[in-house]
Image (cartoon, protein in one colour):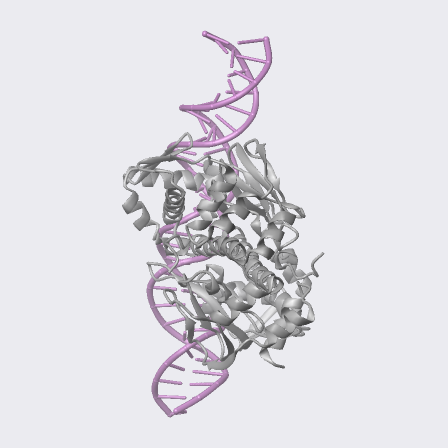
Length: 240
Length: 240
DNA sequence: CGTCGGGTTGAGGGTGATCAAAGTTTGTGG
DNA sequence: CCACAAACTTTGATCACCCTCAACCCGACG
């Protein structure tokens, strides 16, 4: 499917766009660019003049402290525009990096801004996407701030599962996750060693397994329970 | 000053609004409501039909886990609209509570939405406010995820100082902060006891003191350094 | 003057960090 | 196809930061 069709479909999950809105979005200029795994799409300090629509692959946003520690802030999947904020926040305050090889739809700010100015509903749909981002950040704060290690991991996996399903990827009993335990550690505010131990616990408890970049869900329901996962914050249900 | 004038002034810090935009904002219907300390403005699950502009006082957003632990997600001060997201995210995924007695300007969603649809620049200004919110969340993740306890506290205080200055409150050497050590603990992902100990360290090191809801800055520069504080993420500099 | 919320301090314990080493995959070049 | 290197995973031993529990103190306020 065309990248912009995917975007329309995604926005329509939460916003009532009419045919003209949809057409306008699909006429957005976009060119495809591929990035190798572990490469930077934009980094802190950049002033991008375009946004990156993920067509395929996994990416993450992260920051590095003055003491050299890395914190992953969010994981992004197909259909996400992780740097949409750069439309209105002109300098990047964090990095956007690929976790796997990615194909990215590059959309110039000019065109996006023109579109949002002429079509308020499209602006609202995109605005809402950035608000959902923020909601995910909030839950992420709770995760690293208040949950024990095993629950953090369980929560992260549960969130990813839910989001993958929302974009139509069936995670029935397993799904790809191109992250190392070091990446997971940086996402969870833990050390890689401890992630490994916690993983072992979840495996022994029959909740999940993780080998060679694939998550195998043994008991997704219990996993969500251990992680205290409640998908309200993803705001995926049709808007009422 | 009128609440809506304050809002205009705030938005103009980051966005070029013309006179008509400003007038349109100032014509927004708003009524003043006061909340006692420690009360809820909106809570998780609510579907608010209006937004809350903080005119005076301190508020915070927070979530409670299934195991009953509370995590404070952000602190809000005069000029903030902490639940601006509710304009487009219809059900609250967290609570908004007062930390001190607050006077709130209540603005109906209808009016706000009409304004953003008719005036794209106002929409962009408000959108940007929610994006800065998200930037603050991101830094908050780094704080609880990757910094040791003393640095977390130092960072939080440095952030508040910077934000208070941005709205014109001189924090020369001290400022009010209506939070208990328990509140701070919930903001930092620590226990109250440990916050107390860390506070003692910062006090003994001559960085800051905190008594009876006032922060006394002894060495703000060093405090920022200990907290690894860099204000880039607040996006306060005039937009270029 | 008594109560209550909040601050302070101490003792002991546990989760997760650190350090270290061995094992396993994956990929690469000969 | 094998040899080797690099990256990642796994495990063990030890350590420390922060938590828990508990007691006491202090100031505000009725």
